[in-house]
Amino acid sequence: MQNAAEMLLEGAKALRDGATDDEVTQAARDVIIRHKERRQQVFGVGHPIHVDGDPRVPALRDLSRENGYYGLHWRLMEAISAVLINEHKRKLPMNVVGAIGAIIAAMGLDPLIGRGLALVGRSAGLLAHVLEEKSQPMAREAWELVLQADPRNVLP
Image (cartoon, rainbow, N blue to C red; front, top):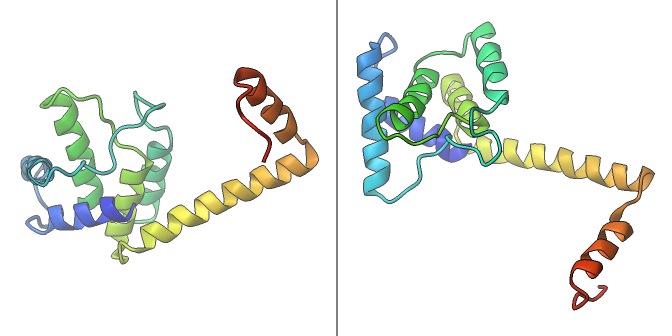
């Protein structure tokens, strides 16, 4: 999320709030070229499961619009994905990282907050798994399946 927000802030420097779609698309091309030259991935696109689009993105886009944070950075992130799909023929729709990066940039927050947001989300998920294991234990059963699949594994 931090990387996506930094990418969008850098890419939007040459744009103004009222930038035309053509200007935003050109800025997206420039972002992609810079990342390719640096041998860096383009952040905020693609997903191993949601190959046709991350279902969290429309909800975050709607929330951004409702709260006044849909603008230049969202448009740039959408354009980056569109250029990759339409011009580079890569199936890389925007993912939740790109959406949250756009929100962070639009809100004028320090991109570093993206790292913290990722940790909060992961921590909440881990806590949910711990509580689930307490009420519906399955770790031992899962380990037994691992042993059946490969008996060379040993119990810790």
